[in-house]
Image 1 (spheres, helix red, strand yellow):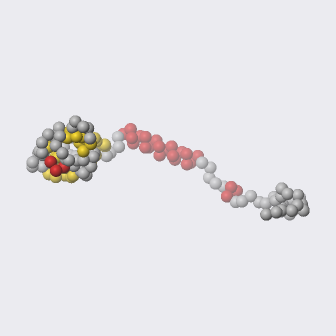
Image 2: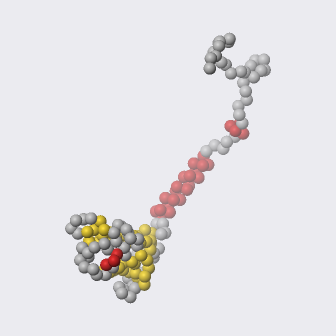
Image 3: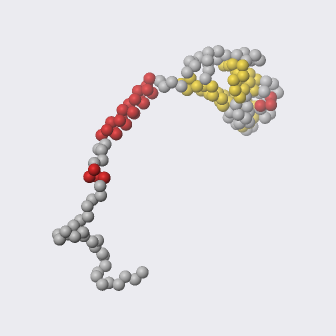
Length: 159
């Protein structure tokens, strides 16, 4: 809980490989009313106060930053001007997603591509007969048949 106009540093050390994309999500809520607050924070690598600036979140209700971590220490810093008031409860989460697909994902992708290939191969190729229009019907005397009208001969057609 942020109770004074202080600068707060939240430290973390990733224990995963650097081929993962890491996203930090943070959320601030006014205590005890539970009203969401706009917040913003910066991401640094190294020790608090002497770290290297990596990026800044947007000024939003649930800001996030995505980055590719290396082994080492990181921290996010929240300054008094980045929170609307004193008395907010800040919560957050660090989520990772592997940038390189896992072996089971490769197997599923390969199976999908092979399935598409089999479907494409099993479809019949269009033949010349299916692409040309059907010939006109001929009467027994060799003349082209006329369309049959639904009205009797000599009937008047009013439009």
